[in-house]
Image 1 (tube, rainbow, N blue to C red):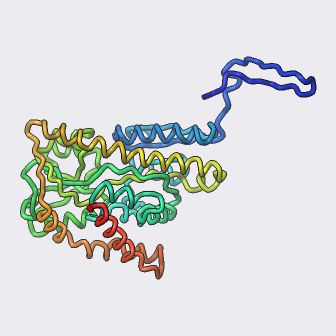
Image 2 (image 1 turned 60 degrees about the vertical axis):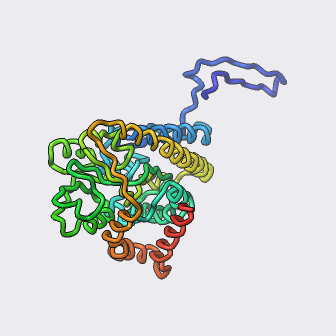
Image 3 (image 1 turned 90 degrees about the vertical axis):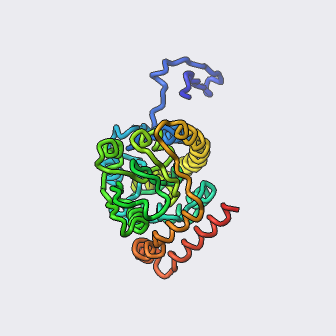
Length: 354
């Protein structure tokens, strides 16, 4: 809190005087004023970001002030990315599409993260995905601060329950620049007449309501908070990918920050990431309960055998070979990083399932 008293000690006169000054006269100005753009409507994430900002102010003793702009008010995803990259915006929350962050494809390789327990290990500081994504963001002029997970992806649609490859027949499915997930869908719906259509995330609701698309990958929070369930009939909990957003800061701003302030921001970010996992995990049951009570909406629960069949159809090995291996070899030459990373993730998932 800003101090309202300013005590001037006059040692020469061996006396002290406490002088009360107006708040406007003594309010210390921050050394650094940053902007933080959140391009989506994500209430829980916003709570996390607000806590992060408070912690940064606290741990930096007020030397850093961050102004949060929510719900895309400071720019959409693409605008936010380029603004942070150029430095006109300091911090942003991102989905690292490969076309803007080449190594970002590792953020959500299909079937790589299978539970909250696994995600908390993989994306934690010094976790295998945290380190890889830091390298990926460094390439595009940013430093990662924290990761905000929202849970597993399934497929929502307006036509039929999806349990097996045949159920994708003739569906129009919305996709984005998450090329790993696109490849997985192409495998799951191969030879069914399914078509994939690129559409901005913000247009999913209108696309479903108007029949432009029949379905999309989505998750429990978005089904409720972004109202996807209002314009869908079914949600299949395929759990073929993990939603994880990256919060990153302009690297030049970061590199010029004194070490003590870097430590302060890093501490705030690490604690906020833990807080985010707690909030999102706790909220998941509430989202599911809300959806189960919705008229005209059905949650389709897959068996492990059904998931295994869809995973096999996705051809995960080929996706890693095409998308992950080339970048990993370039970023980590001679380290056999693809095999190491896949092994680490498999061990993390196995341990989390026990």
